[in-house]
Amino acid sequence: MMDKLDIRYTELKDFEYLLTWLNDPDNNKWFPFSTSQEIEESAKNWINFSRYKSSLTGVVDNKVCAIGTLFLMPYRKLIHHCMFYMIVDKKYRNHGIGSTMLKNLINLGQNYFKLESIFTEVFENSPMIPLLEKFKFNQFAKQENFIKIDDNHYLARILFDIWFK
Image 1 (tube, helix red, strand yellow):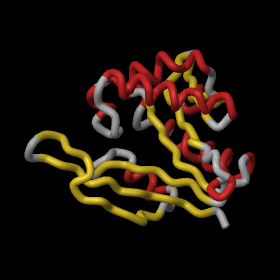
Image 2 (cartoon, helix red, strand yellow; image 1 turned 30 degrees about the horizontal axis):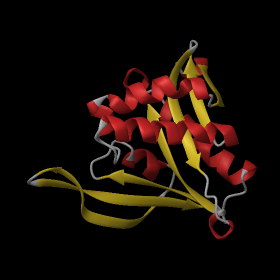
Image 3 (cartoon, helix red, strand yellow; image 1 turned 120 degrees about the vertical axis):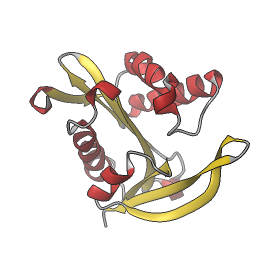
Image 4 (spheres, helix red, strand yellow; image 1 turned 90 degrees about the vertical axis):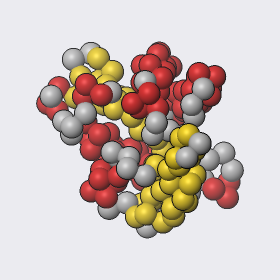
């Protein structure tokens, strides 16, 4: 499958894939938005970074299978780093697509945008944690009870970053 993977800049038309994936409860539990309005607004914000060429889309056999985006900062004092999100379609997981996408996001941030670091937030038990550790991201913060799942269950938010300089 990896030999068929093509990575291109994200296009606005990729919105429908992103929205579908974020509406899937198995995926959505790893992101901070939950209502249909929050999901749609977040997906619009996410996909709009394609205008800056700070978003990449993975394609296998002409099917969109992953999107990773650098959320560039608009403030001069903060342009040396940014947050990123990434999602891989369930049908394409565990084939190295996430690793390739993350490698390309790191390269895009470091070499094209001249960032000094990128960071992401995940929630405890996220399947993305081993991937971040594989790429030598550093856990720099953990906030207990950050996401409320139900009246008696919370998840911690964990922040990871990688510095290039």
